[in-house]
Length: 173
Image 1 (cartoon, rainbow, N blue to C red):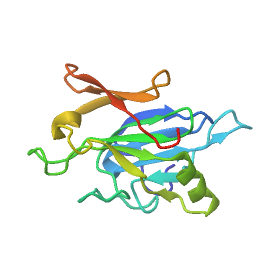
Image 2 (image 1 turned 60 degrees about the vertical axis):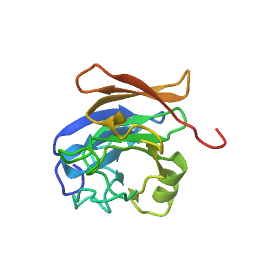
Image 3 (image 1 turned 135 degrees about the vertical axis):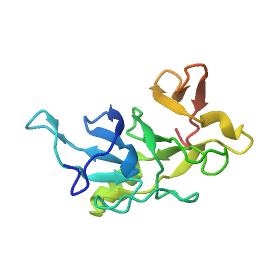
């Protein structure tokens, strides 16, 4: 259960360093965290965190540059620190209408949200495309991988012809 809104077109899953299951629920425009249940040895069936929406019951697509909304999340990855990276597909036939983004959700903001009893977490910032990047860099992404050796991310495009690295420059890390 994802609280009263059924999962629609799960595009990606990942497990963070603490064993929590993260699910990219594309057509509900969100990513959900299903916490690890140590007693059962698996993830719980009810989500406790939502990225991209205000709560578990609504599904509104991003229509601007908001950090609190997602549009078609297709990739989710955790790094060794528990930070979450979410890759959006974007929307619109014309490039530039609603470009895809790679967003960072910090482990600290996720933990603070849980302490405050608020399941919704906003992104800390957009990692790509950055100013000066070719806006088409993320169009039609298909996969996202965290590389612990270089503390960065790899992205693969849908047609498999473009693989590129995205440096993750986090202050103080």
